[in-house]
Length: 362
Image (tube, rainbow, N blue to C red; front, side, top):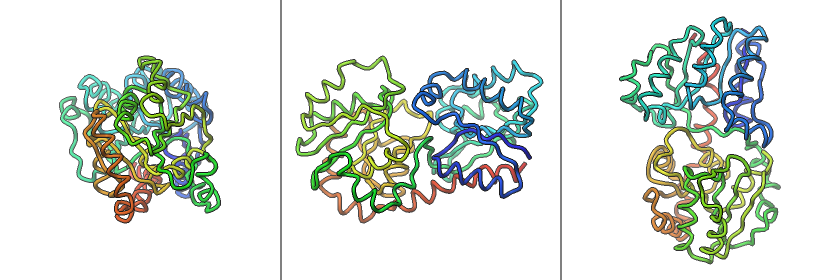
């Protein structure tokens, strides 16, 4: 079959997925949505244009299958576009997260209607790493067609990272020097979109309680800025913890993973309301063999407990977060010895099998 494949998963994982589809005898064309910072801004903020671009390209390219590997978090958009294209020819397989969508009955109803569209032949739903996850109640209430739903175990995705740089001993050895971190100092990293739902203000508040012997590094992406946040939040961070460095810049797919390697502790500060997707932070931190401090909810606590890759804290509690960071620093060697970093990435790589597996099942 002739397949149009969109972005989905870390770059090397995505490439493996495409190779396996080709090995199964399919012709695969890759449609790249996310390559530059500007593309990512469009990808996260201009959903309608994104959906239109993909559907136009698929319909005009004589494709049999549109494999929408980019996660569908708002099914209403794709539903709207498909309703406007009753003669859309390619059949669609799309990815979504099992949890998150289920929090809204209205969204599950839209999902049901989308799955029932004749163009859609399969919805691949990520169950994160939980092997025995039950179907959410709202899915059942909405009457989602379970025959078209394929639940897979896929830990997380991260769109544009080249994790293979972490296999280069020279890069790894000089990663701290590259970012100007001193030998022997504990580096605590928060990296990601500067957004309220990611809990960046909670992290800033936690800095008041954190030992100033640690170097705190905030890597604030230049895209996806949340205008609801205090515009003086970075100034507050410096006030709360003078031993801080702000990295307000875009790093390439080859450099960004090395920032995780250069750190010692990686922090996830997400709010409880963050249940609509995965997170690339645990994948990057684990691949870089760095321990994580994360909130005790959703899949964060599940991956930390399963793989012993860090500690958790009470969600949205700055003092609890600070105490967890200091606890992890104090007993870092013990946690590092027990951590199952390789198993995390092995599960992560399994996601490259999913597209070929789904195609075999059709």
